[in-house]
Amino acid sequence: MASRSKAAGKSAKSATTKGSEGFTPEERAAMRARARELKGKAEGEEAVLAAIAAMPAPDRALAKRVHAIITSTAPGLSPKTWYGMPAYAKDGNVVCFFQSADKFKARYATLGFSDKAHVDDGAMWPTSYALTKLTDAEEARIAALVTKAVG
Image (cartoon, rainbow, N blue to C red; front, side, top):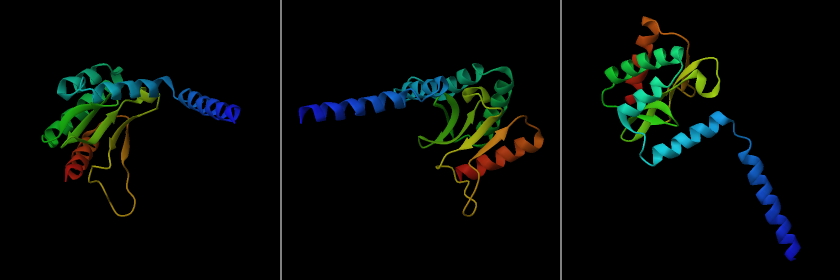
């Protein structure tokens, strides 16, 4: 019986080790950033501006503009970082966030909304939007989405 429990413990340990190796370096960095945020080291406007400043040029320009749109449209939202990304919260809950294309080596940046956002539209609706550039039309759409999200 003793050898049986050793074998069971060994296979459980192997499964755990294998699972942790499945994360990309970008995913591990996001998890570390989230752990720092939970410890209270990365909060507020200053942290968001630092996260934006650390982005590559094309995403940085988009993020600056999205930040300006969100903070002017919904001044009641609190800027904070979330998994290292600029995010905006209401009553401590993230409502929307900006994800740099560089974050996970994607081909476009993303404006996303959490389940706390009131963007529901029937039985199915988008919770994130790809961003490659911002024109007046996209800026107006973002402002409308944020207004709806904060309900």
